[in-house]
Image (tube, rainbow, N blue to C red; front, top):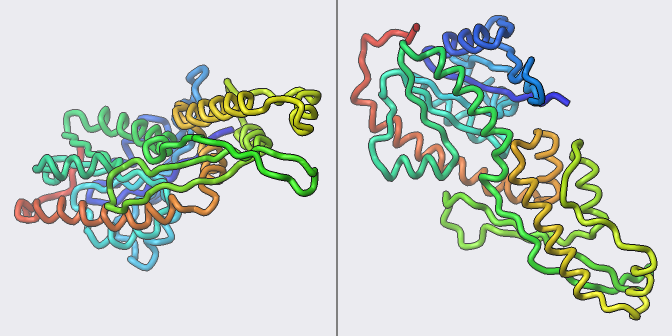
Length: 314
């Protein structure tokens, strides 16, 4: 199954950037749109279809529409801050923001700002005419990989405990495993950025089956006889359930470390660990902080703007 990643590009030399990608990866170019396939012809490597849109000069009212299709937002030198202010609030939960600069105009000068960008998984890349094609081609692969593996940069997932509760339908006890999530980047100052969701073993099985690829380390189902004896109270169950809890946590965390998950698998995993979409709400607040960081980055360099600056054309 082929992944699809949408890249929105804004700034003075967006056209040159998309032209470079299409030439490097033998893609298709149509107006302000470019399409390329990464990983094609490489044995054992998953292919990713990338569609890039140049939104420079696009009417402001249309920007939220493009933002909703965006997995990666590439901000080039000369991009109006108004475009970012319009697009960032409309992007979905997992979007990678990249700052690309030809002459170090936007280079973060303060260590604090660099740390702030890093904590929000923002990418800063400086290119020049001499290495434009190589760096920008490499940048696309880095950004797509970052997007597909973004979930593990945001979430820490554990299964710290289980509880055996009465099942009215079966007149027996069934086990629920607590899936606890914490938001990793220190981009907000909230005291509570974690949540817990109770899940049955069969729900873990459902997640495994929905991923679309084989996984290792998933704990096998229990033997029918042992299940009957445990429910009848004739078999000590605590040791088995605690071992299953540990195995489920190891398996779940291995999914976050996968290199990388498909977007469909990411969505399935998010629905499993975050059914109330709390991550989306947290990131909606975090995007306000992202805008603050970008404003600081752009404003501290405003005085360096060259009035005669032309498009960067390698």
